[in-house]
Length: 344
Image 1 (cartoon, rainbow, N blue to C red):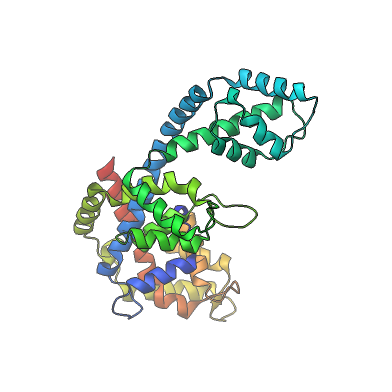
Image 2 (cartoon, rainbow, N blue to C red):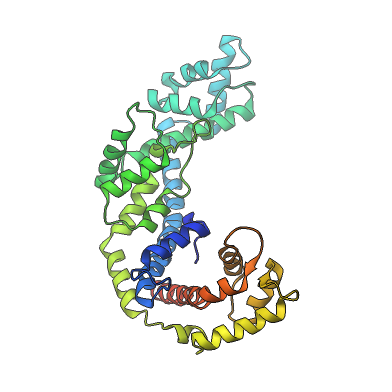
């Protein structure tokens, strides 16, 4: 499955497939699979849309930040160097930097000044380069503050939920608590959607916790996108229209014929008759099946087939699940093509 942008490992995918196997027969039926595939493809498309949108919004916020700061980069550098020069110092620790940024000339709130100083750290040498870097951090903090002021109802609800867990008001939470907050506040979100919201979140280097307040603008925007009437309608329509059946997707070949051909190729590649293939041999077999697999799909199947992580793929074990697994990849590709054709 296409899971790179969702932060899912092969083990996560296995658990998801086990969950959608409603009749617990170790085979994923078409009816069981389609909602999962539609979920994956829609999440990826909405994330692509968000990435384009956030670039535009970020540019607007940075322009607004310059207006609030009321000085350009050159003026900021001159102000900082002049202020430090008056003290006779050549460096600033974090506390001194906070005090400097709280000066009225920079037009920052106490919270913005503290956040910028905390993000930047100490200035070991107060020169043009370090002041330029500080200017970028200050603009980013102002832009973040502006973005956080316009989260809307969804953002307000999410903030309140997460602040309940953040008892010390640090702005940091363990990832499982953030996930719990998302599931509690927005129970309509699917497991895949929640996982995608966790992916790419800023993490505090010292504690390993999520900087959830910094992640709120992205969380809010994607929750709105996932929850929109248009998204629900798109999912329902695609699920109804995705009339792809296994034999269709596998070049007209049913499971019995496919298993026979796969077994013959496996036996041919298994030179020592051990019943096991190494990754290179396994990749050759997959390519010889002429299924049009992409390199990342082959890599996924290598990981999926190597159940115990010893670098060997069992012919019998893989043959047992090969048809359903490969047809799922083909289904996802077909659904992906359908969705993108409809959207663009």
